[in-house]
Image (cartoon, rainbow, N blue to C red):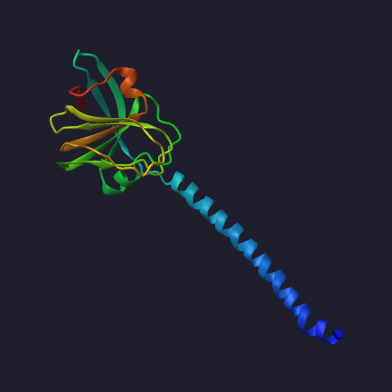
Length: 171
């Protein structure tokens, strides 16, 4: 091979390959940074939920008080408790269905286990899903028409001895 061939052909090819390799690595880093920023943006952009007191009265008369965030709008309901790393034992989120329907929930992008209480329009708990699996896209379906779904920290149902027929009151 002549020295002229190496200078005119191989050198530019090598430079192009080096630039292409750097471009690929730079793209990968930028893409990873954008993905991380996108997730952290989601964390920062929690909807500003209205809160209200709520109580659950068991059939033997014990009352348990909570402060719940109200997921009323479609945007709030879609976001729910996604990306939360912790939910205090006396907090929760209440989803309202107008009109009542067979609610379908999931745990996509939800980092903590939850207990879901499905509540009839008259306030009775008619179905429960306990310790739902974080990040799962498995659908959690109410077999009955419900007006509300209450999400509490996983283990709350067992800890408080809640059962079907207990009454929920939004105050």
